Length: 288
Image 1 (cartoon, one colour):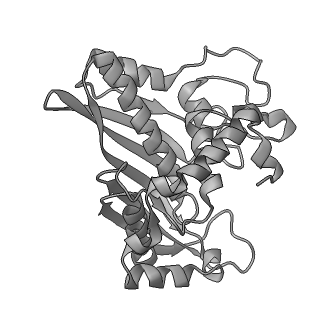
Image 2 (cartoon, helix red, strand yellow; image 1 turned 180 degrees about the horizontal axis):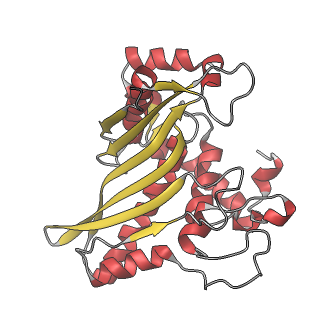
C-alpha cells in the first residue's frame, strides 16, 4: 500500500524549522507528480507535515538562503498583513482572484467570482477582528479561527488558496497570556514559499497578540506557531536549480551560519516600507 508520509519537525526559530522541514521532506517524502509539472520535470517530493516553531519571533529570524530576498520578504509581509495588493484582485480582467489579506480581513462567504458586485452575497467579514473580539471576551475559547476557502468559486480557479485556516488560542501565563497560533494548508511549496508564508503569518500573530493585550489590559506574548500542510512539497525541477548544494550545506554546517537577526535587515526593510507607502505598486514594475 502506498501512503503519503506523515512527518513532524520542531525548531526553535524560523530558519531552524525551515531547514529541518526541507531535510525531512527531501529525505522521507514520496515521489509524486503535480499539476504544475512541465514535460520532463522529475516528480516532486511530497509529505503531510506538521512544523512547530517554538519561539517564532526569536532571533535569528531570517534565513539568508530562502529563495527570494529582503525586498520580496517585506513586500509579501505587507501584502498579507496590510493588504497593500488587495487592489490587484480583478478576476474579470484575468488578475488575482484573492489575497490572503482579503480572505482574512474581508471574507465574502458568497460571491460571483467574475463580478464582485453581483448578488446575492453576505457582507464581508473581518475574521481577524472576530478572533480578537472572541478571545478578548472568552480568553479560553476554542472558536477563534478564520477560514479562506470559498467553495462556490475557488475549486475551478487555476491557483486556489493554499492557506485554508488560521486558529488561535490563549493560555494563561503569570499575570498575562500567551497566544498560540496554528495554520492549516491544503498545499505548499516548501522550498520557495514556506519561509515567506510563515514570516508573514507570525507577524500577524504578533499583531493579534498586541491587540489582545490592549483589549485585556494584560501582557500577551507570542507562543509557539504550528504549521500543518496536507501536501508539503519540493518540486522536482528544483533539483536543477541548485537544491542539492543547499541540502548539503544544511547537513554539514549549523543553520546559524545561514541566518540573520532582523536588525541586520531593518535598514533595508525601512527603505522598502517608505517606498511602498508612496506607491504600493512600485516593486510590481520591477523597481529596485
